[in-house]
Length: 199
Image (cartoon, rainbow, N blue to C red; front, top):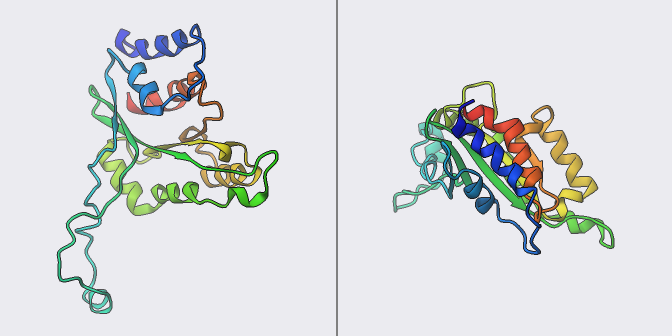
């Protein structure tokens, strides 16, 4: 590992000497700071998939059975929250950050009824996996995305079990960022489990 690559490891270690602020840390800010003077960058709202559905071919039979609008559909796609790129290797990992309420102390079970976590599961579909893998240049043997959960969902006994089941052995590809005042565990997770995919 070169000195530039080592800088990201050094930076999260440097955070341990800082006093945690009372404000929540923003995912983008954490990784922008982590990646300074390295081969990595974080991009907010990557738009490379903004039109992926526009050119999906449908059979004549299906086309005869659906509504065909008079105006052309020019924008129809997927918009991850972030992308982490390695300039040197030309590899990219796509990121979803999902903040959601959940069932915790003093609440009721229905507090966890939101479905932001379910929406993030679209990246598991065969078609999107193929598209994200090709664009991210990560190969066929890994998931091309990372989902970070924030808020009470990270402590909800039902939602934590659902997410753990969905990701199964892909434990590197999701993270419960329970204390968003402390970015150190988040950065450690990236450095330990995901950074190698981009090298």
